[in-house]
Image 1 (cartoon, helix red, strand yellow):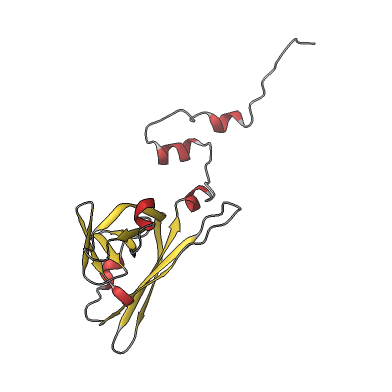
Image 2 (cartoon, one colour; image 1 turned 60 degrees about the vertical axis):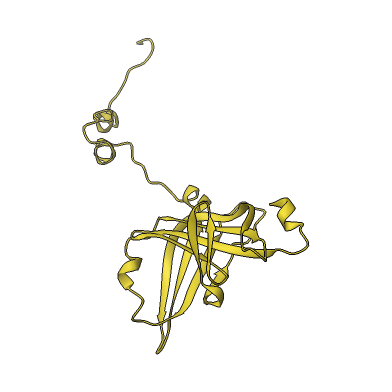
Length: 180
């Protein structure tokens, strides 16, 4: 990749991959098709708009938004967006030989995370879908509520009785050491 970027003439590519329940969607910011690792990526050209994640010094998780526009509302099936939240999405930066279109080197992963929310805008003649993906670090920052109770243990691990007597410990008086 380093050698490819340093060449006299290169074509930069931005590739977006999303794992929808009906299958993987692979788009790139050009026209036609490109192949990477045996997978076909379809060109969306100017119909693909990307708001990339920015880097921060505090390590906070950032989001990225991808908008695909310019298709007719009849083509869009809202069912496609059912059940996609929490599924993988990633963005890659690659360079290609401008004459052959062949991707040079190994693409650089710009963003990797999970799809979080969508915004569908249906205009009169065209529609657009904006998918927002959260960085995988965002999951580490979520508050996890865990109770050390028998009931919660049963929800997580049915049949495990390891916390069966925790409630009884609350009022249990344990005498420790020498008696007076």
